[in-house]
Length: 152
Image 1 (tube, rainbow, N blue to C red):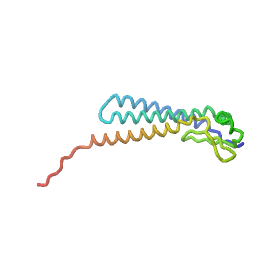
Image 2: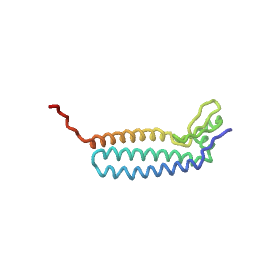
Image 3: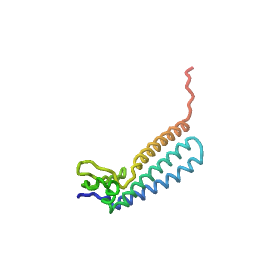
Image 4: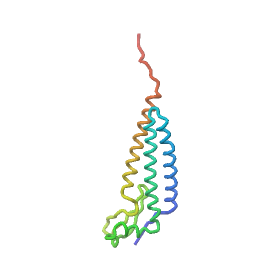
């Protein structure tokens, strides 16, 4: 059986970076909403949605890290009926996933909860959308109004 185990060091670095980003975005998001003003909810909401995406990513990496030495066990726990057909493993870091490859050519997911990828994607889309709204609001309010020039 061939295998490609997740590397512990990149997983650990990814978890630390995602956690720092999440804490930083939460530390920016709530005060931004609290300060009020134009675009405050969009700025703060974008930061908080980004923080949730980072937390979901860290959760996925932690799931991979915890199963780093027990990849075969994770595949067996995920689907005991198909475990006898497993020919190898593949790991993805973005989105975090551990796939158990079958001799028939298919695969099934193990170790990382299935809902994390949609949560990360949805939160990232919401964060980008709110950030664009905040930028548009900022540009709208800081652009000086020029009265129309009249030719007389």
